[in-house]
Amino acid sequence: MSANNKKVLIVVENLPLPLDRRVWQESCALRDAGYEVAVICPKMRGYNTPYEVLEGIHIYRHWISDEAGGFLGFFAEYASALWGEFWLTWKVWSKHRFKIIHLCNPPDLLFLLTLPFKLLGVKVIYDVHDVWPEFFEAKFGKRGLFYWAVRAAERASHFFANTVLATNESVKEIAMTRGKKRDSDVFVVRTAPSIRTAEVKPDPSLKHGRKFLVGYVGVMGNADGVGYLIEAAAHIVNDLGRRDVQFLLMGTGPEFNNLLEMRARHKLEDFLDMPGRVSNEFLFTALQTIDLGASADPINSYNNHCTMNKVLEYMAFGKPQVMFDLKEGRASAQSASLYVPENSGKALARGILELLDDPARREQMGSEGKKRFTSELNWGKSVENLVAAYQKTLES
Image 1: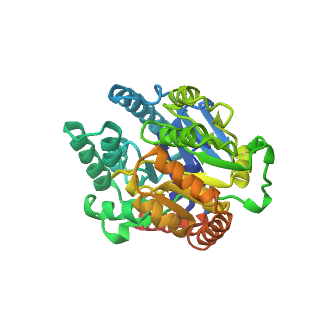
Image 2: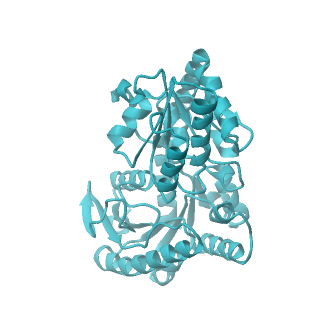
Image 3: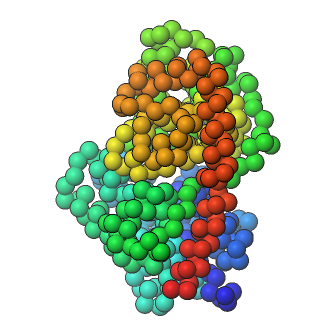
């Protein structure tokens, strides 16, 4: 294959690089496969340099409005992002003459960027990070005119894509049913951490002298259910009087300040640390230290289709976990997790304590999770599918 054909532009709106771990790993894997990779992403969360080259990846960043809270926030965020992406796409085209545009949703509006380039022979890969219609419904609690507009955008994204990347089998099924794609056009590229866990040492000081440490890592938005975890901590500490459990919630997002206020209302400052966005070094050390990983993503139609990064990260470090009973969560973790059947902070607390008070079960679950991650869900297997998807796209 000619080197001139191995040029790709990746567009991602949710997070900047290298913070977006999935897109960063994809970029590096494509670089290693001989592709010239340029990425367009937002200026946010401390990554504000308009252009830089990191490890051979060309990164172009644009201004974006504040992260979305309500509907008007969503509109402002997506409108500002589309404008920044539009002019940067032409700038990158003038410099790199890419042969593939790789679109990472959400939102499912990025296909608009591809229309003029399709006429120039550029191929399109649609990388489905989130099932956007279900996310919209979970976010606003109802369907309606805008829900169906989102469905139309999803359909258009599939229509204009030559190839689709799905994070799991549920998303692949949607691409083949609602998106009308053929099985041969859809590749499962899971989001899996690439970490040398054996090189990471635990840090007992994170436990603040307590016996157990329960960890969470992830986005803190109003659809992520972190409030359930704070309610669980309040029940464990305040209602049940347990003083042997420390909580560490890592990450940030639109609800972060509200969650800090919630922690204060429950008087949990001494038992629940919320450091915000952390470095990879801190994150990996924390994951090596925790006794139990927690997920709080509530049961709904959107989350049932999602493979949460945190689920695989807990497994990579051999940690048992507790989560609400989600279809893809169960498909990924299998016996490595305890599944809570209802969206309830108290029910989540019961699951947490059930595992903390059973060390033999925790050890077995952690061991089974790490074995499954290493043999079936590791990033290396996804890289094979990613490279195959690119080869198929260029040959189509």
